[in-house]
Length: 84
Ligand SMILES: [Zn+2]
Image (cartoon, rainbow, N blue to C red; front, side, top):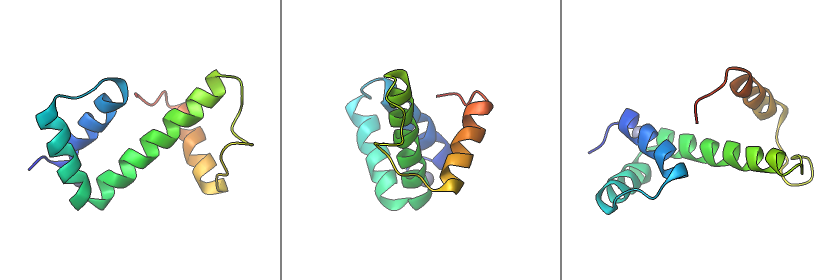
């Protein structure tokens, strides 16, 4: 069983490249059982989508409705050069 730390690294890597089969299976099993890592993965996917929209010059207002709390957290992460 992978640790949450290992899964967070694999989630980040999986955004950039296809993981080997064994790592994908181990990560998915962990995600099925761990709510915190599922939430982390979903946040990473959301942040990636937001960055793609900004990079494409589309902004996010018409695509995604975010709460004030989530917008503040994203601004905070982006202001810290969050590594992803
Ligand atoms: Zn976990």
